[in-house]
Image (cartoon, rainbow, N blue to C red; front, side, top):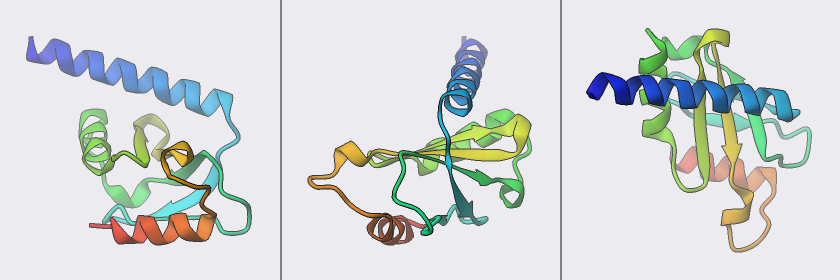
Length: 114
């Protein structure tokens, strides 16, 4: 039963990753080995970003999904795209009391960096 749950999770993440990459023009971001994320400040805040995950040293799709799940919270969702060695980021701009700019979001992301 536990294996079935893992398979379902991987399929769901794969579908989400495919939908995300097909339906949006993601902004660029950078992420380091500690999952410290920095959004591109050359453009306005966007709902979706993508970052190179090479430095995250994922060993499998399940490992990538687990690590992304650990860093996801109410304001930001990390989705591993293991096949393309990238991480997809969803900024939940609708969950703040007022509209925030990219500078605010970068400060927030730095404050939650572990």
